[in-house]
Image (cartoon, rainbow, N blue to C red; front, side, top):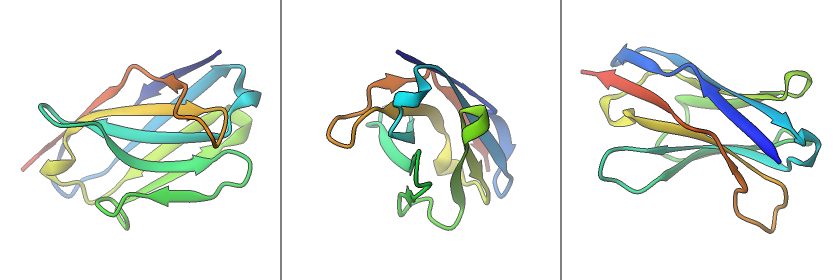
Length: 119
């Protein structure tokens, strides 16, 4: 099992920045890819970005490309989401997730951290 704990959410004004962290523990050697998702009230959960653990290759959703950056620190088993130029529509609960195989869906989920962007 892998446990994921997010931190770094909060309230920020539009145009501001936040950095989310996701610390993994447990069987971290089994992680293939880590991702960030978000869910706004009344909306479906939305993919934000992912990073492949071994290669470091990344993918960002079009809605955040150029503003958000996913990265990882292998030594700390931690994934980050640097969020710049935040907009009110970025307001959501942000979840960290992990998967152990490219063939499966995400196996592990964190509890989520609230990000609120005021206009």
